Length: 212
Image 1 (tube, one colour):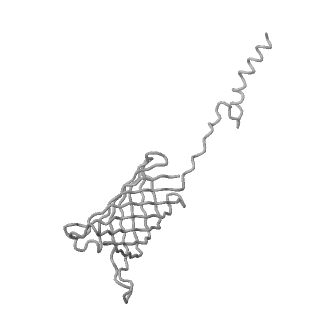
Image 2 (cartoon, one colour):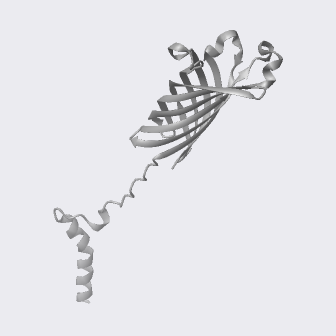
Image 3 (cartoon, rainbow, N blue to C red):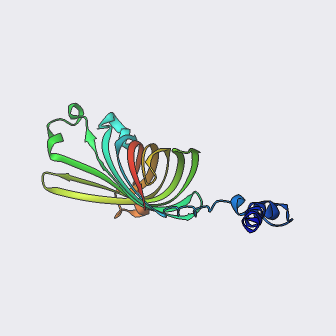
């Protein structure tokens, strides 16, 4: 009976003895194991649908109206909040039929951009981000009328900014404003380098982004 009492006393005294010793943490006070932070995705794919308002020489005689646009971007994070991207934008140029006349149905004009740029992103809240980007683009204007067509290209610059709202860790919905401008060589064969067409657009788009 005395042996059982001694064992009981020693067992109860163990936690107290450990807590009383300096530099020894009792087993019941060990810090919890912290799971490693999830790895942030590096790649971003963005699809956009929007409208492009004509500026520059497109505004001459008010022939061109606000036109639908499609966009695609693929980005890669190179530093916290900084990424490089390549992109493509397509604008189906719309004409005012009252100004152009009966030939509007046979006339098809498109604007295309190949983009290379850098994006800076800043978190605004746990579920929203602000971004701004600058780009160098290769713009091409193509026109066809009754089966005959021509294309002209030039180099330009652009800027874009907007907000992204995260609906999931890897999926975001966003809105953005953009401005692009390029000088298109429309008469390359003439002396002096040819005439420049001011290919400028102010755009608005809604976009869907995926990170992986």
